[in-house]
Length: 139
Image: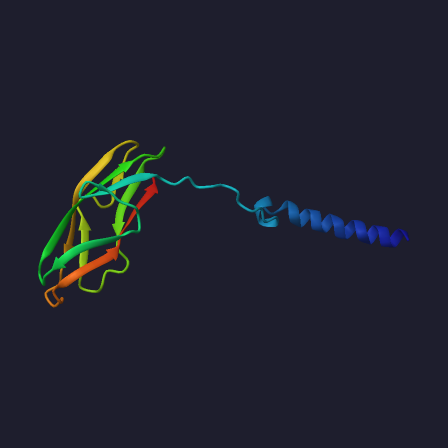
């Protein structure tokens, strides 16, 4: 019986010795409970309140044309944010730019600029609309 206890103690000491050589975060997986706060913004297109992800209609457009809208974003949250515009459904050859894209938006600050849709030379004349997203990432 004494040999068994001695063997057990030897194995336990070996495990404790190995465990002591590793940082605790490598031995135990602790789920993260941190919540990353998000930035909050108000959005206006051509001075009308607009909801993120809503389709934006460009009306009738023609090849090689640049169609503009005014985009205003106000930071109403508790954190500074980097603001970018994205339109994931925009077809190849079309482009959408905003003069304030990628700029830092301080708390309560307003960014206002031109949102320009560039129509490719080979586009069919017609009415187009796509979902538009304003991403406000906390900085």
